[in-house]
Image 1: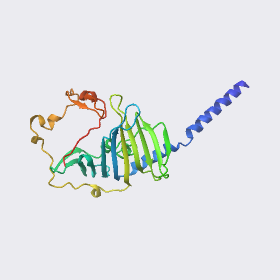
Image 2: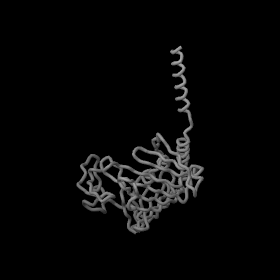
Image 3: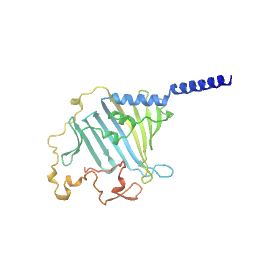
Image 4: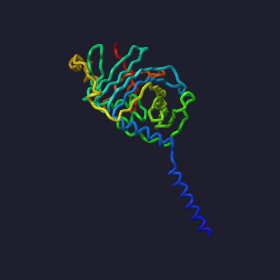
Length: 280
């Protein structure tokens, strides 16, 4: 009798585990639906504000604002489209342009174009949100746990998803049709570096399931020339500015967001957010 009771108990526990495994997970289901929507889209048309802010080490409160960019993005998966970014307070503006064959950074003042890649895959680093990473063709690791947040009082139709991605945290605010219209991402690169928070506010979002290269390819003006490496003499040449893989890092010091100094070699194995400025 005791043996029979034990067998029954084991069977009931197994059934309970199986039922739990099959139970719907609203957060995960919504997360998968969002990624599927972005993966399906061939092209994106978006306007948004992107802000980088360092966080205080202990309380994770926002410190001094780093940069506040206005971004207009009209890109097709591949190398057709353009991204315009501006930082009004610093008089900074630049354009990433894809002519269908490659992506270039345009210097409108000097009328030059500098190749930066074969496609727009850098979007996953510029806007490191799971849906954007999924759009460029990569597969974000599925979070173990997703918290579903109710919409704020002024926008009750929105739904929030908050989750951890390794040491980083993301919160996505979604419309009923699974478009991200606001988000923040906290990037944690370890104790040696301050955490950085990315805040995004989208004023418009369009996901296009059908798109043609000729409709998105950026028409780079003919007078924009690609710099010849020979124009940069001696130590300032383009080749001289590149380190071979495995080279010893030069003794160059930088200051982080908190003002602390560190050398180039200490960046090995780290993802680094670089600030670069364009003259206008």
